[in-house]
Image (cartoon, rainbow, N blue to C red; front, top):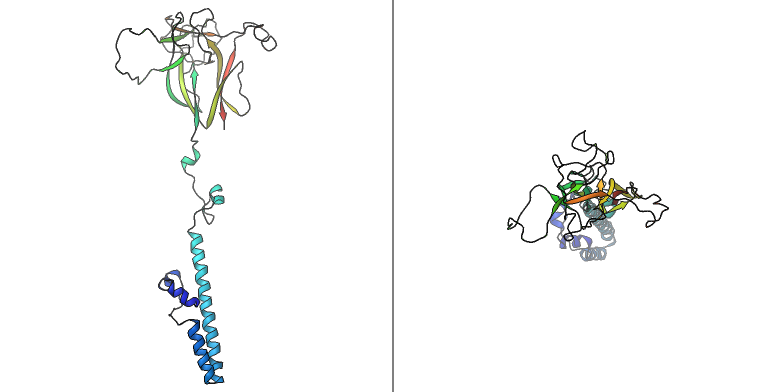
Length: 303
């Protein structure tokens, strides 16, 4: 079958003008018709054969040229409408080298980490504050109850069938600082310039989300983070007093805490004391002096 007949039979003929080809196409009998005419002419005489042979050659060459142009045009248009390849996507370019604008979603990490910032009502500038609140726990003189400190929200509380009065025997109290030493904590974030220590003030807290982090860790006896980790805040390790009936977790309280205005009354409840070292039980090499107040730092991992 001739190339011309193939083009016509495959349905390309009516759309050739739309592709930019200007030469007219007519349905011919193909190569077999040309050969029959050539054979008949040659039988009629040498002169006729000499005339028809160049005509057939010119017709076949013309058709081959048009088919080649058609194939090149189809390939070119397919390349222009193709999707960006892997290399284009990697280099933020569309097919053909055009710059591809990155969406905001591409720039925002789809993962993060959550930690509590004890002692501060707002998170650091690199973290989002999910909510702010006060530290709560069981009473220091009770044997039962929980053994951990919680960050309780102070706004948008939601209740479900509450009943006034104590019927159940498990209680939640606020927590207070038990530090009566001037200059131990930084006073830069306290409620007044006249306050030099947070003794009996309620302990504030905030729950923080930091994007692009995959883990967090609290490291005692350190104020800096390992390589590859980002420092969120540092301060002092604190917990319940050693001879109280209720023992609590160790938490890292910000070294420059906020204080809740008007909360300096001695209401007790949960209490927070600085944690001191005991040389001998701890190795006396790094912890060579008993009674040192332990520092701490909270770090997040940068993936």
